[in-house]
Image 1 (cartoon, rainbow, N blue to C red):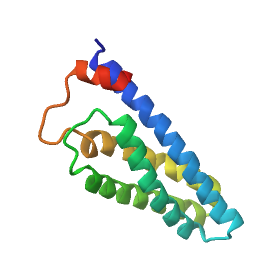
Image 2 (tube, helix red, strand yellow):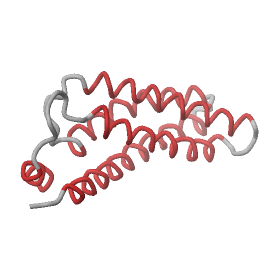
Image 3 (cartoon, rainbow, N blue to C red):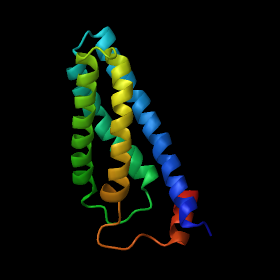
Length: 147
């Protein structure tokens, strides 16, 4: 039987792996829109978040938080979390670019790192928590996460 700390470490690793996959795909979309489509970096960020929102929810729901039950409210909370992460990302990106601290691509790398950390904490503690029930038993999590 795995300890709760081991299960949380697995969840964190899954979040990082799925998040890295989502981030890599979305950053490629952002870079292509800015560099090749000559889109304004702010509009590219909106497109990036729209696409990444759906992809991220599916990836995290099916892997990172697959053991959680009763998630009827999860998508609405996920959307609220992403709006918050987007606003944080947007504000940091805009400040870094407008103050000429970084170019649009480097500034986005910094901004998305901060937004990702905030998003993980909200998803773990609010979006994908077990609604109205206690967390699943460790043995049940072990079987689900080991699969």
